[in-house]
Amino acid sequence: MLEKIRAVFADPQVADLEGLYDAINAARDLAPDSDFEACYDIVMAEGGPESEAWIAFTVHTSSRFDIDQQPDPDQFLQVLRERCDARRQE
Image (cartoon, rainbow, N blue to C red; front, side, top):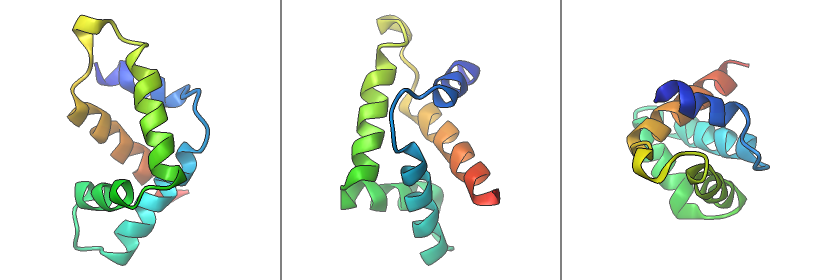
């Protein structure tokens, strides 16, 4: 399932995911002792274009999986973290 999720991230069909990655990484830089999910929660609670991009992405992505084979949200967060980590290393 993770490979299918990674494929969706590779072809997101939604603009501004890079801004989401950058916002999460900025939160991680400000609070280096926080875990990834805490930084993700901060960005989502703040709202704005980054969280809107994520919502659009997850809604759009749900249509790419069969209704009875929807990925677990934790799997999406795992791949989101991978993408943020990769962006951070650029």
